[in-house]
Image (cartoon, rainbow, N blue to C red; front, side):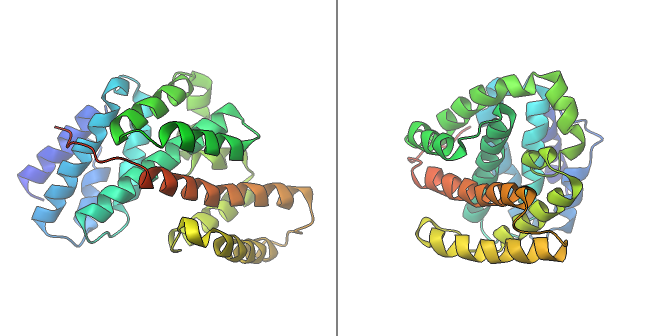
Length: 245
């Protein structure tokens, strides 16, 4: 790994209050099949992106969650910087919107997603992140909640409220969704395919689709798809933004 890439990794970790001896970022870059120049461009894009979270940088749990999102995004072998940047924005919005809903224990999730789309949909990326960050800031200042999610940092925070069996089903659904061509125009077809996949998963676990547990879990799984569609809608409405320096 070049000195330039190492320095860029250190700069990102310093901004996010991640210890310098944490080498998870470097390890992911070592495994990526890209040129050094491409890796450097990715790091530069990542650093510009995290600048949007500057007003929250003193809240360490918040910055740790941003770091998890960076790592998760780097696991995908995107072939262009535009694709990488789009995925980074999508993953970040998805994680923080889901965390807000989970922490708030909001039951009318469809209404919340609709409200977020309407209220955040006309903002540029910077103001959008600031407004979303202000919504979830109390969550990261709640020590009891932060301690609860600590061990689950690498998975979706919404999984925490489920049993181990349900967590595994959600993780498999999440991986399946990542392989799908998700768009607003294909929502109905996706819901049908998702239901087939879900029924297959619960059957493999010996669960009954008629049980209250599985009916509740299906609503949560369907919410995972709606979340991705909501984020796609938000991203489609983002106005052009001047480059952050």
